Length: 124
Image 1 (cartoon, rainbow, N blue to C red):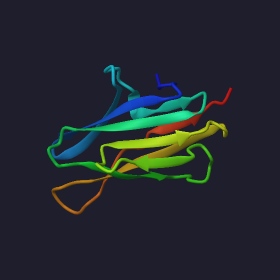
Image 2: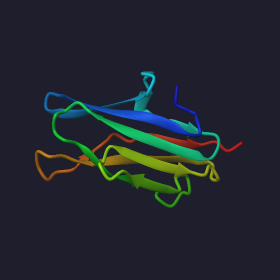
Image 3: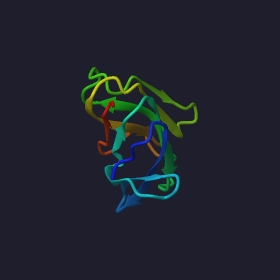
């Protein structure tokens, strides 16, 4: 079941399996969020907190959108330490947008992309 709170904190947990990053998502209470999908029913901020279990020094550096002009997400902020991403969603446009987290690491100069979680706006 996707998270549906206006102000949400979601942990993005990254582990290594056979040398490859594997992403999972959960609430701060430990409840799993399949695929990291969120449904928004009122204006608010969705905060993603990085939990790096890889030992590779991962940091958020941005978020890439397939449809950046769909009006679902209104703004993105990445914390200076790269541990948090905040998405401002005014919930004015109905629809769904897909995105990928972009991360850097301390091992090499290559970027890491997450699988694509979704934000679905369901304005009431």
